[in-house]
Image (cartoon, rainbow, N blue to C red; front, side):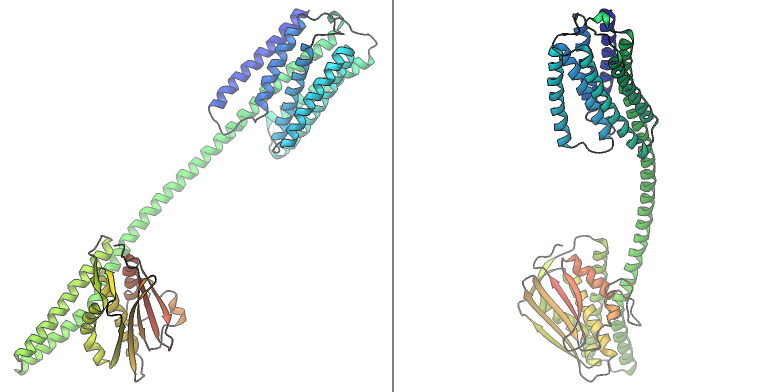
Length: 480
């Protein structure tokens, strides 16, 4: 009889060991869904308990005074059951450190109490004590599984709940049977067959609980894999949409840049071409009147040459801007640049009776692309001239200041016109949003683009005495 009981324990130990080995390989796969930190130790300790108990039965004769290894094996059974209960608790919440410490203390108390019962107690008292503790643990498991099932319905969890209920019922029956029996058991052969069958049934159901825990784990892995497939499908769909959107944006951006370049060239070439047209008309008139002196020829040809060079400079500057390639950078004296700009705009300033006041540091040097920065100043001063052209006041002034500041250099262009309406200031530097009736909204956008390329910034503010003021701030060293 002892051999059969021992063999039964060894068979269950081998089954649980095989289950433990299989789960170990799952752990090595580094899956995101795992049975929890308490389940593996519980299964491992259960294998040890079954093995220790099976070995101990082979040498036991007097169940009244069994050997010390029975205390060890029963304590291991308690630890395995308690860890399994903690595992079911961990499905609902994080098990705190205090709870884990309390579990360790309870294991020590169980060990001491069972050892005292082994020495001075009876088979009945030890069995009732163990069955009572196990019944409480199974009740705890049932409660935790019920809570988990309310939030996440699962067939595996339902089966685990049923198995825990059966284990609790069998342990309660052991208690009832021993309390109602008047027979004192002292030898292994005296143990009633019903108690042996109940013990076998409890251990078998316990093994099934571990197996169904793996089933629950497999169920969660299946759900997790399905969710990942759905998420991967959604992500792939989003990536496809993203690629399509990027392709559409690239196409739209290419069209936008091409249009902006064409419009910018047309806008920026308007002034030098208009000046060229006037000079040609003037030359035709002199030729028709027969009043073309050598000095006049030289003056007109020089003017045409300046306008032609200016047109070439504009085209070269715009081409460099829109290609985003590195352009020539030099360190030049800013007042010298303003002299060339004044000579270009002087006829228009004179015709509009506009005073141009320059307040520049004579040694103010700027590092950057001379043609591009010349284009910026021509745009800003040209805008100021157009603003004053619509103003009926008698005194029209454009003031240009240049100085060193802590950030680098600062240049401001100020006019005493009407200024920019508050409603237009927010989008002043946006592309194709100009407020002038004849403008296309490219000048200021182009100015900001150039200044940004030079690592600086440009902004608008109302002038102190009324009018508009545009401020440029450039670093001492250009990033171009």
